[in-house]
Image (cartoon, rainbow, N blue to C red):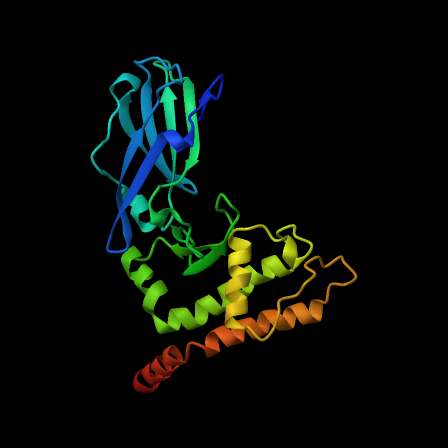
Length: 262
C-alpha cells in the first residue's frame, strides 16, 4: 500500500508523551494499547489522531479519534503483524485536509518485549526459498525472513524447535552476520569501534560460543594489519563450535535419519 506523507510545518510529538504496551499470547504479538498525551502542542481539537503499527513494508493504521477526545483505548488487534517479533509505531495528527500537523516516529513499546531480539523473524515472498537473511531493520540489524507462502505457524515452530532447521540454518546465519561485522561492512575499523547495539551483541554471543579465541581486532580489509586468513578461520571456528554445542539436536537428527531414510 503506497502512501505519501506531507511533513510541511509538522510538530514533533515527544515520545515521553506516548505509552504503548504490546500484549502477547502464545509467544506471539496479539494486540496493543496506546495512551497518548498531546497537551502543550497547540494542536486543534478537531484534528484526527492515528497510530500506525509497522515493520518493514507492512503497516496497519488505527483511528484514535480527535485531539480533544483522546483517552486509553481497548486493546487493538495486531492483524497480520502478529507473526512479526518486532513492531514499531508512529503517531500522526492530521488536519481535516490531510496535512500532518504532528508526528512521532519509531516509537517502541514500553514493555519488556519492546527489546529487539537478536534475530527477529519476519515473513515475505521468497519464491522457492524457505528462508533468507536480510539487514533491513531500522538499526540495520539482521532479520531471519521465512517464506510467507508456507504456513506461518508451522514455519515459526520449525525455526524455534526443529533440529534439522536449527542445525542447517542457524550456523550459516551466525557466519553471515559475523562476516558482515568482521569484514568491516558496519563501518567500524576495529572491534572496539563497534557501536553499542546488535553488532556488539552478536560478537559477544560469538565469544561466549568460542571463549578461547578472541575475534579479530582489525575489521577493515584495506588496513595492512587486517588478517583475512585469521578472520576466516575465526568465523569458521565459531560456526563449527555452535554446531558442536548442539549435540542433542545432532543425535536426534541422526536417529530420525536412521529410522526414516532407506
